[in-house]
Length: 146
Image 1 (cartoon, rainbow, N blue to C red):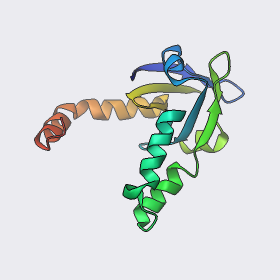
Image 2 (cartoon, one colour):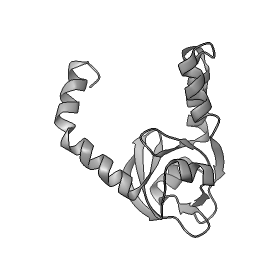
Image 3 (tube, rainbow, N blue to C red):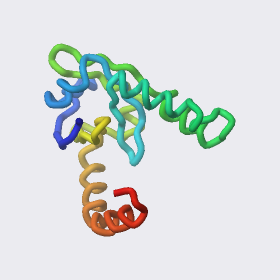
Image 4 (cartoon, one colour):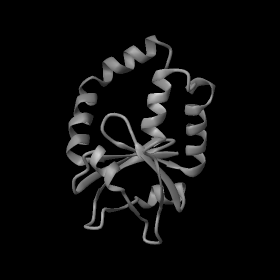
């Protein structure tokens, strides 16, 4: 399970060092795709196969406009990335720009994926969520989701 928060810096060659905890669980090849809420999603190859299957399967019918749009966004801009022997991975410019990644980034483990956030964006987002965590828990509990 991928959990935890780790801060890193993008080097001058657009490489990020995947935290060693995540490196062990994710392997040498990962898929990086635009995420939601201004971050990037990073999946193992196996998990990406599951996710992409769900997106393009019955639930993600190409006959539904919303499904087509989400498929184009997530699948169309996804990139297979190799994690080198030093644990570094190259973030393509189009993904770095989309997530507005500057120099300092934060890796967040979210069970089945890792998210990469610009540090300032993550700080603002996490403070906002922290301020309403009680209300979110109540709402999700009432909906039977937790």
